[in-house]
Length: 152
Image (cartoon, rainbow, N blue to C red; front, side, top):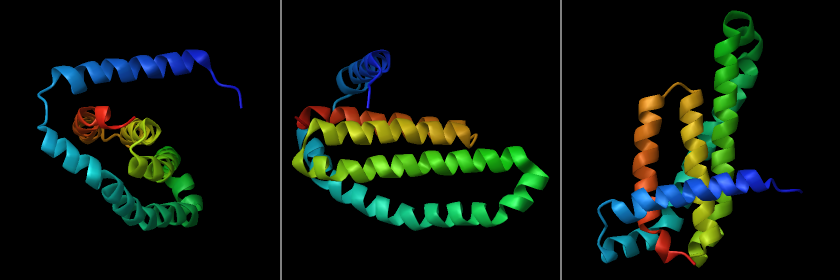
């Protein structure tokens, strides 16, 4: 699979910018708190992923069953919920892929959670949950960039 150098450069630039504000300029968490977060992160991610899976499968299944009715009455709303569901599934898959890296404390695992956070923000925007998505992204990115130096 060919990679897009412009996309990689843009994502790298975004990560660098976010690290500057959330990792360096923001108030620092104490080292003990960072260590606790790093130790618990893989387990919390695993538990949240397991809890989210049935809900996403239910939503996806329910959307499929109601598709003919929803598309006739509210096609745009159905399309938005379907896109939101697909984007949420992508976020869930990224989190699942991140778990081994989080246990190994590799930067690859950290980046997968970072990308999942960004994808989750997009899902919030698609669902028109701008304020909730923005708050969630800011809080999540703050904690992610505070512990970034713990992953190699």
